[in-house]
Image (cartoon, rainbow, N blue to C red; front, top):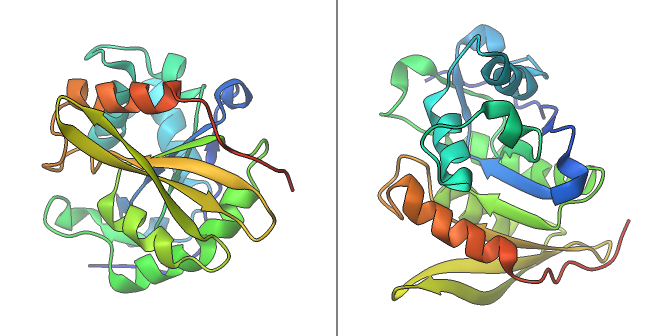
Length: 209
C-alpha cells in the first residue's frame, strides 16, 4: 500500500452547494503514487464524472444513495453538494477492495478535518458520512466535540446521528450511513430512505465563524 504525503486536498464544491449546504464525507482516494500530491484530485475526479470522461463506482453509489435512482445525470446531483474524503494520502489502487486507509492516513484526517470543515463557504448544515472509520475518527478531532442525537429509525433499524460543535461556536448535524459497498444499510434504496429522513429533519446547526 502506498500513502503520501498527508496533504489536505481542495474539496469539491458544487455550483449550487449554497442552496443545500450538504457536505458528503467519504473515506479515502484509491490511485497511483504520483497522485499523492495532487491537491485538485477530488475536484478532478468528480468533474471527470460530470464530463463523462471517467466513471467511479464508489462515487456513483453515493450519488444513487442520495437520489434513489439507479440512473441519473451526475451534474444534477454533484453540483448541489460539497464532497471531501476524510483521509488524505492515497491507497494504492491495486489494493482496491482489499485494503483501506492506514492508521497514519486516519490520524492525518483527524488533524485536518476540523479546519477543512470550518473553511467551507458557506458552512454545511448537514453532513452525510459514507465511512464508519471516518465517522468514529471524528469523535477524537480536537476542537470538534461530538454530541449524540436521536437516531433516524425506519422499520426498526436505527442509524446514528450526532452534532459536532466547534470551538468557534458552530454546530453541524451528521449521520453515518456506512461505506457505499459495505454491509451496513446495503443497497441504494435503503441508504436513500435514511438520508432523506435525516435531511428532512429541521437543522439544529447554529452560529457562524
